[in-house]
Image 1 (tube, each protein chain N blue to C red):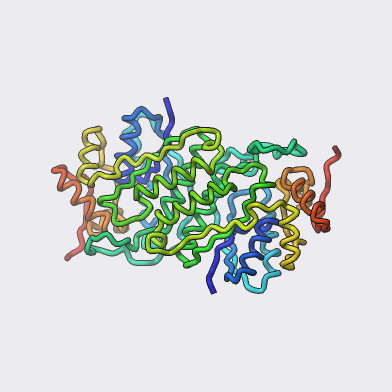
Image 2: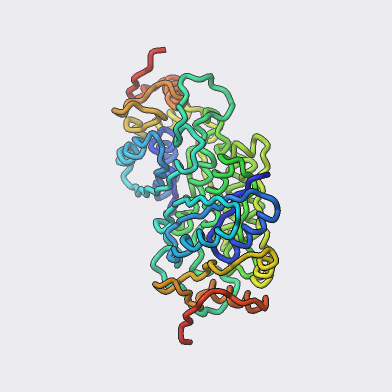
Length: 227
Length: 227
């Protein structure tokens, strides 16, 4: 049974990705990065989400990206609400975040001999993050092949992004088919102090639309801002 | 004046690289990574080394790679002494270290609009680290071009590795020509508790050989193990 590292935030995408890795027969290792995110609740919720999977290991790795700044998710920049969705790159973009996360995953991959790395990137509902694009994944795989001991020794790093071309609705449906329980998943970028989702940030809007289009009930509770 | 990020450990290579970036007209920002290295002295020494440069900014960014393990530099694996130098990858290899460091540098680059990133990799005296090879640098540059907001917006990330094909002797000579004062630089992987270099680890052996071949005096103090 081959081991896989799954970048795991406890949201819809990474939870579905985790379930897909399990279905594909991998022994899953969840790698959760504590990067000083505003929505730190996702780290706590993530542990609850994982309990539904009979076999799971979770590694929590701290790397404080607040020192880098430049994003509404880590610095003191307001999270936009109900903005026009377009393909521009939003202020919630954390510079080089997935690059840093995947680099850390590659280090764990090398130490734990788990050369399959899963992450929940997708290009359709992705709010324009450049490090969720297929060109990025391909270039990064090449970097690992030529720039790590394991790669040079012939181990084949594979970056799996099974959700890459799925809409949020398709992701939700795929998860439901795999029996995923989404009740503890957390998506909101800017929850209220009691943890209730705002319903208006990009992430909430995309999530709600996804469940709605999938004809499924979103188990999250929202305290929607007055419009 | 264009800003550059220089990965800076306070050793011979990164100090020379810093001086080269200054000579090339960049406004230099030293990025020192506190990664839980055994030879933590290098972080303290680094500050002293930088004092010789009239303009310098230093960022110390913590990311604790001891949680990843797998290397004599971060885990509880003995640092080899007086080993046969060959092209095999040594136990002091930290999995994906330069990849993680350069990814962090890329994040700072994006926030600080400093798209020139310097690091002191070299392929000759490099003890076989895969993430010091030109193929790695090229693949990583491509990853930044396609996987960051700045890259997509047309900013041109350049990874500079000016020492890539230099021997340690050539590096020392280049530094001396630029007026570098190496007296505070630290190289030893496994110093004695009082900070004196061991003289026998790969890094000490390469350094001593470099100064010797350059016909220069090594300002470091060694307490050489009995052979």
